[in-house]
Length: 135
Image 1 (cartoon, rainbow, N blue to C red):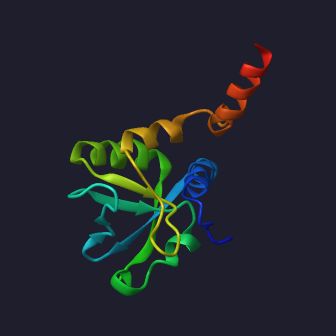
Image 2: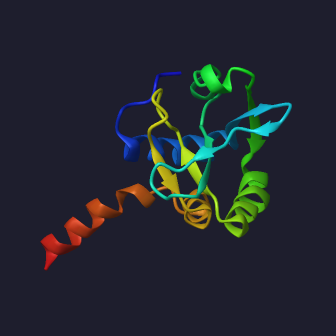
């Protein structure tokens, strides 16, 4: 698969599209559990990074995560169990972070809505412009 871009929003949209299509998300797992790091946006908040493809997740199995391997989760399990639990725990989800571990940090409930939403969710801005043109 191709590498992720430097555009966090584009990478996030790709995460949602590809996770819907494959029915899987990918995280990094070790004997100690799943990879987690501190939020770059919110002090005292943890972020669990996930990717839409195994190869993008595997690129991060180095440095402090050298002991981790990519592990997949079924999308339904991820939405119903993981995201619900993450929301209760007050943690965030990192979606399709690039090689520098840069990307969006998303509220679990918001991500669940996106993953369960319509295929055309990301075309809403275009629809709004068309509606304005008609008035």
